[in-house]
Image 1 (cartoon, helix red, strand yellow):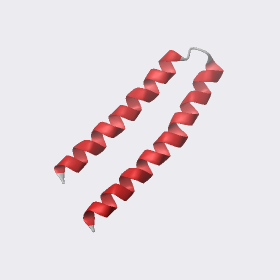
Image 2 (cartoon, rainbow, N blue to C red):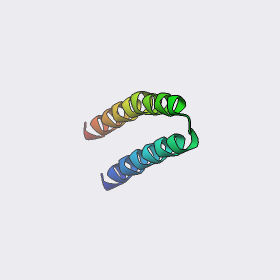
Image 3 (cartoon, helix red, strand yellow):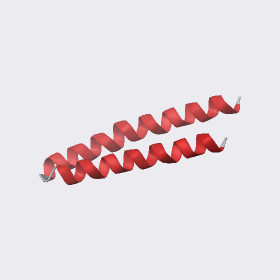
Image 4 (cartoon, rainbow, N blue to C red):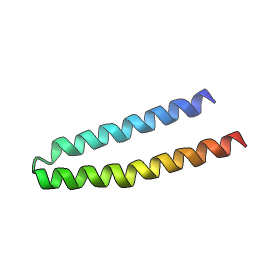
Length: 60
């Protein structure tokens, strides 16, 4: 069980780092806004859903 929690923390830190990296790379405000919306909506939803399914399958 502790290995699963560590994996979850590392995955969330990875997505947060990637999101910040994209924000700093795109200096244009429009591209910055679009990139952050895509990262938070698509990747944030998919990782939360995937982690929820992964953790729920481990508890069964």
